[in-house]
Length: 171
Image (cartoon, helix red, strand yellow):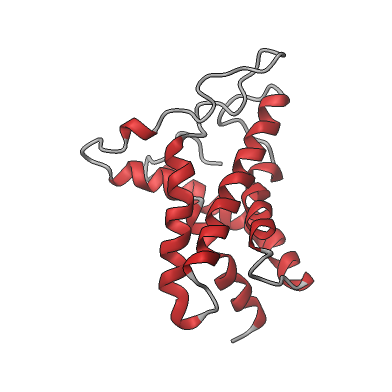
């Protein structure tokens, strides 16, 4: 397999984990997930009066990201070095990267859904790569490729989610 394909296969659990809250809510016709859509920060504010993370970071994401990461990794086991553990690390890494991005946006007094450029597009990849270091070695070309291509992939998938009425904004 070509190195660039391997790089995408390695990161695929994180890419799909990033879609977990949106897709889970989209398919939850009975409202079973409603109880875990509460914000992680419980509405808490820091001394400056801004929310810690905001309404968009929920318990559904905390559980959904690693769940998707594990499921995707298990599906990829036959063609890659993925295990359930690599999927767990990538899923949690993507979640905590996304959470860190949200924390930074709140410190900059940015509202939920506002554009934050590359921060919105690569925060989850940075978290996934860092969390996966115990199980993967990332070559510099792989990282460069992922950080160059992810903004386009992210923007495209968000636009599709917007057109499908899964998202309120196309970014």
